[in-house]
Image 1 (tube, one colour):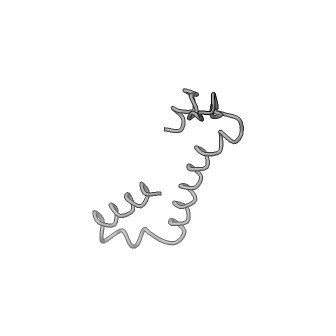
Image 2: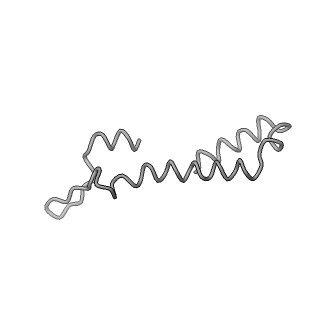
Length: 73
């Protein structure tokens, strides 16, 4: 979300004359939906069984699944 806000502010500053004409409610809704879609695609796979956390000897470790680590970053 912060990344999209930063890009939006950058475009507002570097293109002050054309920015207001391009930014409308529909585009903003698409940008918000896109941010939520990307966030969900990173967050939901562990709930579906991919990259489960490891709990050994009372210590909860972050997932050690290399594939999920690469995917989420």
